[in-house]
Length: 83
Image (cartoon, one colour):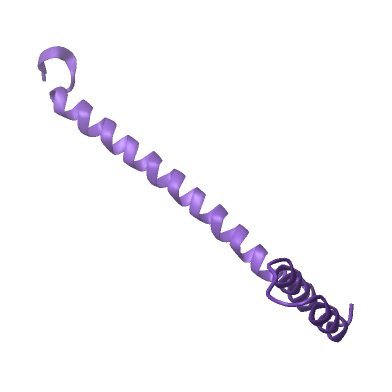
């Protein structure tokens, strides 16, 4: 059968719809890859936990640096934490 303009009867609408469908497909594919990579890296970071003592020492150092505790309090607490 003969279609005008040799476009298999789709006209300009077919080109637009086909192009949008292709963009949606590749956009969804990229989003899926991104989410899988992000989920994988989040699981790895949850597996590693820092030592609780290092967190406590970091908080202690920050409190001392901000002037919330005195030097003697800092030294006593640091001694209690075992470092």
